[in-house]
Length: 202
Image (cartoon, rainbow, N blue to C red; front, side):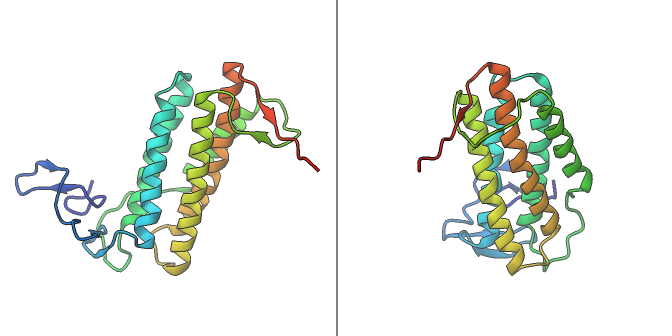
C-alpha cells in the first residue's frame, strides 16, 4: 500500500494507525490517489467503486462450499481486481512513484482457468437462465457486476485515455466476466444442479 496514497477512504494517521473514518467526504467529495479532490459521482469513482462491489461478491463466492482450486483462483482474482481498483483510483495527472500493475499474464491466467473448467463441461446448445443453486446465482451476479464495471471503465478511459493501464484493465474485465460465466457452469456441474435452457417464445 502507498502511505497516504492508497485507495481513497483509507487513511494512516500521524502515528501510523489505520483509520477508517476521515470525515473528509462529508461534503460529497473524495480524494483520488495523488490527493486530487473529486465529487463522489465522478466517472473514476463510479468505475473503481463498482470494482469494489465486484470484489465483495467474489469474496461471497469464495465463502461457499467450493473446491480449494476454485477458492485459490478466486483469491488470485480478488488481488488483481484490487490492483485494477488502485489503477482506476489514481489521478493520471499526478506522478506517482509506485502503483501495483496488471500484466498480460493475468489475462492468460483467466483464459487458462476458463479452458481448464470447460474441459469437464457439456457443450452449450442454447442460452441458459441464471440459477439452479445459490452459489451459481452468486457467480452470475458477479458476472453482471463485472460487465457493469467494464462498461464504466470503457467510458472512463474514453474520456481519460491517460488512465493508468486503462486498456489492460478493460481487457482483464472482459475476460473476467467470461470466467464468471464458466465458473457458474462449473459449480453447477460439481453440485449436480440443473441448467435451465432459455427457450425463446415466438
